[in-house]
Length: 201
Image (cartoon, rainbow, N blue to C red; front, side, top):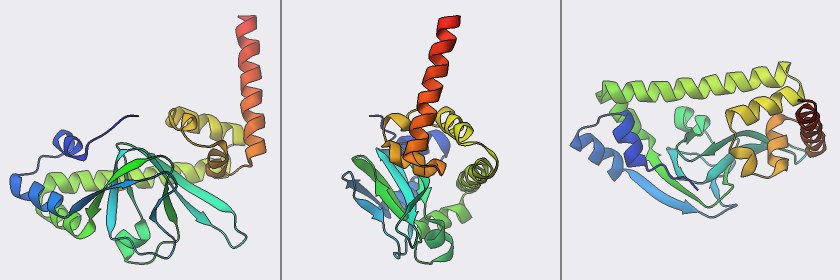
């Protein structure tokens, strides 16, 4: 399993002086979560951003009929935030759950905002992370609206090649907006076509 230490990430992406680093780390927590544990539950208000040093998590909601709808996955080296809590101070509509044994750095949002106001480099990093979050969600909406189930699966595998090896098929199906049975058929069809291509070449 890979690891992305938060301190190493900062040193590679943003130059903070000693006082700024001290402020950020003094108001940060490192927590370990077992597989299946929740970082956040529906109805809780989250005042932290998460940086994943090791492991994988998922963010999902449950509709009134009890069906899960998976919004996103996140693995080591990724930031994750609950937009409702971080930007609007409102209770979450989503659950965030560890899929594997996971180590998380919890960043206090007030200190993130303070550094964003004080440091232009940190402001740029924060802005780029937000833009990337918006870009990913927009691309995901477009795929769900316009692409076939097979196209959504192929795009997912190309964008996140390690995730299908680490998470249950039912979660991938939920992320793609299809049933596990449909995902099984898609994977079987792709495997059969690839086998035919290899034999004919």
